[in-house]
Length: 487
Image (cartoon, rainbow, N blue to C red; front, side):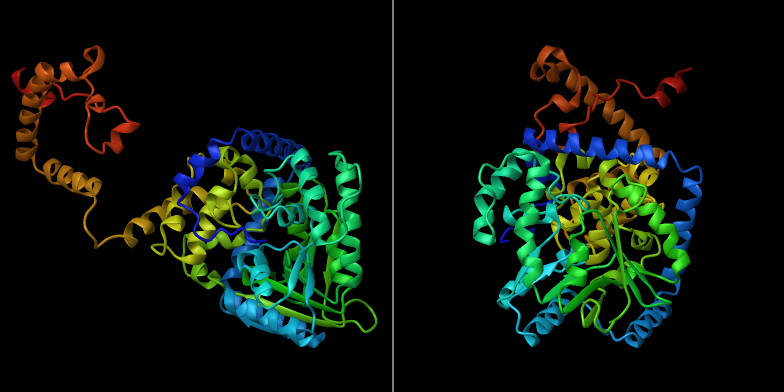
């Protein structure tokens, strides 16, 4: 896949282009509406849903407070069961670890379980530079890969595609990547799934090395967990000789009892199911059963930066369910590509700046503003991440990161207003000046305004970005204080 998020424009520009795509908006509205309805039905069955949300948030917060201890416990448990544990500070280091393992085993292709962490670090592209082809096996990820596209949703990466588009991608691209699509393929979902199954089966059977992520990592037993709906993950986790799992530091949970809470929260919030059809767990290496070599790469890549932010660290509770995307009015209209990251939507608007840092690039700095702050994301989040609170916090950090340079016109205007309003005498002089301005606008302004309107926003101000979307009325002839003084 050659498509990349690198160099994407800031959110306002990308969103404007996405809004012009009517087919995209129809696809998104249909898909997110369907997922919302399924989620609402299964969540409504759970009388103690709010208690589960509180428990999930508490477990995550308590784990994050002692994250160093739990990670060392996880490492020791994995090593005791025959796994090799690697620590990666950033994306290049993690990619180099996986590439080295592939080189050591002489493989030129790997099969992959759907993994946000490996997308985050650009693993497929990094492996390609070493002559190793990475095949996505999740159906939606396969669609994205064959279409030389980019994912636009955490749970359903190809949510921006409809059935007709997927059929054309399969017919056009499958043959170059392996087994071609069947003759006469239609856009019936069962036929499309069958074509993907046949295409992937040969890859599963010949792959010697697989790459996965993990939804959770149980520290006490050294157990990694992947939940999925298709069974492709289980094929990757059991058939190859070598398995490499790239796991974010925040995925750890202390005990199996803690895991129980999340196995109730995740499927209902993500796919709208009571439980995931496939829940795979593995602990180290078992002779004669499954991969005989297991490598676990514990990935930082900005997570400790996010952990140090007292307000923003709650984003590390995220279990990647995508519930916030499905209720967000901004995401539903723009799609995920406008966010310029594998983490789109409300969670992406906070997670990307927390992982990368603010003041680094314009695109990342624009994300905390990609929200109406309606709060729907917080209500839907199964682990109660207060996304609006973090968005406002990050907006202040973005502003602080850009202090010290030449002042912007808006900042000058606010400073001037503060200086005027902080002194009664200065305010009185300003009010008298506004009265004079009113008389001038009354005499000359109506010649400039259609229909004799008296709003400053209709005057041809140079670069009037503020008044492009706001009404700025003409000042009154007489101030309230002047009127009050006469009486």
